[in-house]
Length: 477
Image (cartoon, rainbow, N blue to C red):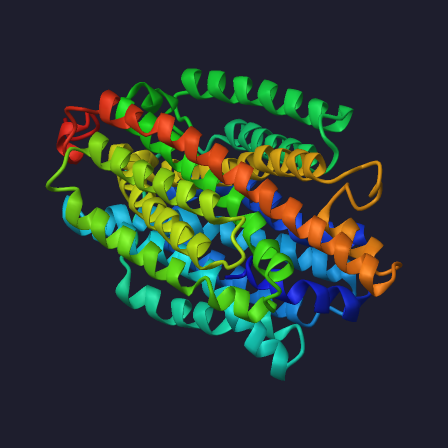
């Protein structure tokens, strides 16, 4: 929710604080950069010094940073507060996953808990714009960040009573070098992906990707040689673990790459307000909850591989449905397909996360949870980069650069160009731009459907004998 509220609150914040485009870009991106880079490190800290302790520290930091952001008088303090929010978020996410592993020993209970965890993420993303729209109608922009404070206070009061402490029983040293190289790896790779979206494969993107890949090699070599690794990279020798991580990347790439195009489609092409476009996402919220619930019911009855494949098939069907209806004069058919997509994502993510957490040894469950979350961040960045480039290329192909040189660059440029024309000319230009954007969305979604469909069979083939945690070749086997 803390991320998605900015979809609606962004214009108001930019206007009230008089942010430059660069400042707003940093306010948006810094959260993802810092959080993605710290997830594995925070998970490793929780393993060694206490997962509940890290959860409480993260909650306190997240709540305090929320107050700082809400009352930030300048763009610089807003950016700093977003960075502190990311530090708190990086402590919260892997702590919750690792504690779920410790609290729920039985497979079916853990899958149900992970289903609720997955649905909570999707629910927050959908509810964020709706709640932000309501708050901005009655209060100032900072109120959208104060939403975090009651939740964090509740956590700080109840977690010490309801949640037992959990940590590695053996005394191990914290891998500082591994933490540093993992941070550098993720920061550079996420930056490179975001840079490609905005500027293509320029020297900065190539340089960041090179540094990130080199740092990743150093990280892996370090983890293989040290006696107290931050994360046991030999887990990737386990097919279930690797399939679970890759499945999460695919789901994150699909939802991130397609999701970032949906709000402009509803608001600009179909003329919905930010609030009503968010309301249209409520069926998707129901789809996510249903997918998580079905995953918990389906897992004991179906081998792990085919179950994950079924989720990916649902994603492909939903994508195909949305793609085939994106050019329609109404958006109902598109939302039906999109809801099926989110259902498939909820189903796949719940099963994949359950496999990843179930495979991790007790000494590294927090770091494994951080790795799972980092793969989601990288998948989202990859999806936005790849699908963003494809959407831009398709949009420009459907516009006429000779007649509309400026409007052919993007839908935003077309709207700006239309403001300088007569009503008749502006209407004709916007009609062409809307049609081009819908066609680009159609192309992106159909390509995503094809890719997801081709990958759907892989989990069933690779894990055709896996059923539940004890048969996955992990700690219990």
